[in-house]
Image (cartoon, rainbow, N blue to C red; front, side, top):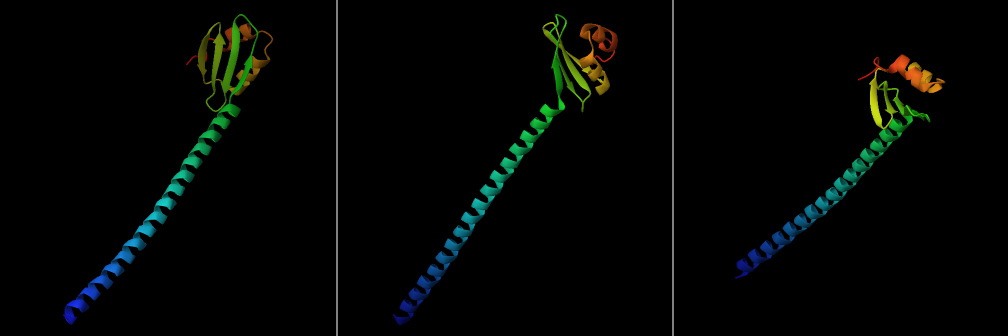
Length: 126
């Protein structure tokens, strides 16, 4: 009987040690999950910040002017792409390969319609 009691005590001690190990592992898993959630949140935040910065840069890159004319309306120019969108009447037309100096000349031209017909139309269409 003494041996059976001793065996039961050993089993109880082993179970207690195993339970401590399981608790320690659960605690470590909980810590790792919190770290992973924090890292995920930081990554998401940084992706948001990157998208925000890109959008802000896009806004800075685009130049535009609006001309009160029956022919030429808003003109938007993106230097990095050398692209320009011109509103003619009620439609927007894309133009590609437009140098910055041409946009600047268009912006400063006395007659936007004449400049468009002379320097852009049929030359820089995409």
